[in-house]
Length: 617
Image 1 (tube, helix red, strand yellow):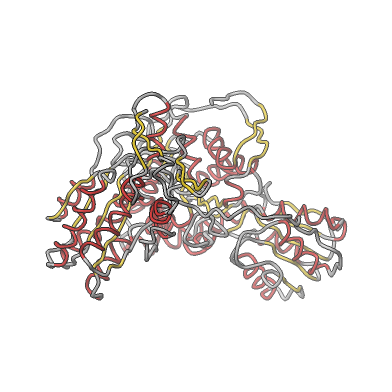
Image 2 (image 1 turned 180 degrees about the horizontal axis):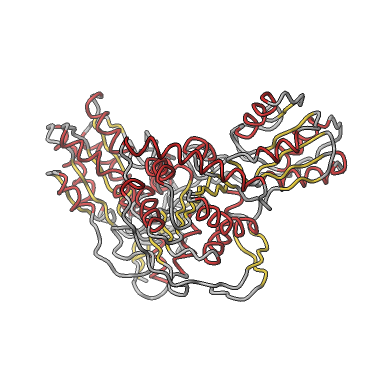
């Protein structure tokens, strides 16, 4: 919703970041979808026309970074957003951007995921700033998230540096009141002025550029010493330094312990470079200090080094009292602070429940075409009587790891399904059947597929094409035929890419046509057994959630299934083999939830008693 007057609005942290981009006059925003960062560019895409902004879902994070960087080189303010592991993909460009510097304000939002809520690791991307000579800031609330975007753009433009804004899942997805300001947008045309000595990272230039990057960071440190987002509360000889969202946890803990008057608190939002003058002012009269930060002891190590260099006799605590792994919670921080202060008291206890709800592990949605494809893979392997390895990738289909499907043996990072398959095909005597979504295929699998042709490797690569980047909320990707701003564009089809890479066996199937899918995968296995190179099978069927949406809108009809209770023997084979959440055990038989069923027919196929039949919508 477009809002241009001053008022207070309840916003997600990610929505607040998007609002900061609008108020900060960002003209270009790019991203590849990834939880917990997705809503930033999703929000901007929905408002792109109203605010005359260019927004795109890029093929991957590296491309997103470079599109935004080019805009900055042209003097436009730009933002790129990605989850923490996405910055790994963009890191090559990240490091060089610190050397070249920027022209228009350029902000990189890195959304970290402590506790791995939706990620393969919980890396702390603040360290990228330290390594790449790039400033890092970290807000403590949705309000600060909005305000610090504007601040980061100003710092970036003033000092010619890209700036990393680090958020976490808890901040990105927390709601809070955000005071918004009237929007003043400028209409600006980008202009790139040729300057090869600045923008060409040849060794002859790079040696000079490194010195310039170091000097830019020193100038930013001076600015951070006076940042309004850092503040000192109290004047006790016992200190606590709280970074980013940890400040909220610390404030809550001190209130619970009634210890505000006993502690001097430094709220630190400018993480790198460390504002040393402010830190020294805070540390010089302290007896002991606790540093509360999420994940790595980045600030703790620097503060210890600073105290050593200045001969400050301050006892520094950090990860000895605050957990190194997992996201911080008020309970964890309260426990750490009470130990630090030597306060013996009964900590708040979790509510004891009389009974626990049954566990609900994440599963594929009812009617998900990936479930049918996974089942077809298992049946094809059984038909061909082979042992198989199942490398997989990042997406909805990673849930094929769980029973009853269990056809995911590895998940490392985006695109690793194909890369690992190149190795497994050479070093294992088993048939390799990899699975990857079409968005991930286009993101990171193409080089590995070319490698399989150049360094001959025979494996089956099943591309699970459901037409969207579904797991993060159905964002369009290059195969969808529509872009972030709703423009119809030419789709980039995985089968055309595979054939262009030199793949000879490449076929498209509909996973709802189960027998044809099983036969095609079996044929692909035969191709691989003969050592004829990679075989690519595109299993194409629109995401079942989109099918249900279109059905409810009256755009399509679905041939849903129901169970004949007289024929159902209660053997539960359908549930045991398929695991579809629309199948519900009831009175020692099975029923199908009509609201969830998409008519995929998989349950009908596996029922040994022919008890499942078609009900026309």
